[in-house]
Length: 77
Image 1 (spheres, rainbow, N blue to C red):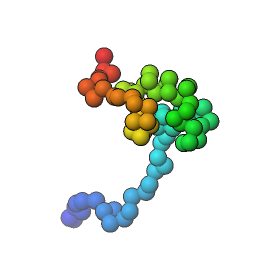
Image 2 (image 1 turned 135 degrees about the vertical axis):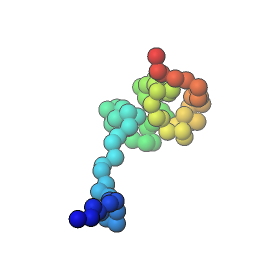
Image 3 (image 1 turned 180 degrees about the horizontal axis):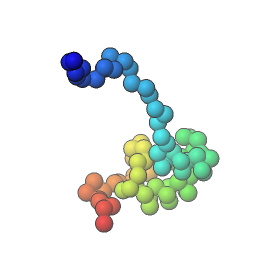
Image 4 (image 1 turned 90 degrees about the vertical axis):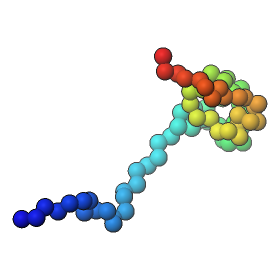
């Protein structure tokens, strides 16, 4: 008896899984902000300042606030 090799499902499309929310998106939802309110929120600005090197924050928002991210920062300690 010959052994079948390879993946028998290689032509079938993969099932998609739902995208998970980022920490930024979770924080925005918690603060009940709309995208138009992001730049004027003091609470969001403070959170972003504390987490700018650790989590994803949209680049357009960082640019609007003039916040720079340290590209060499490593949280592994």
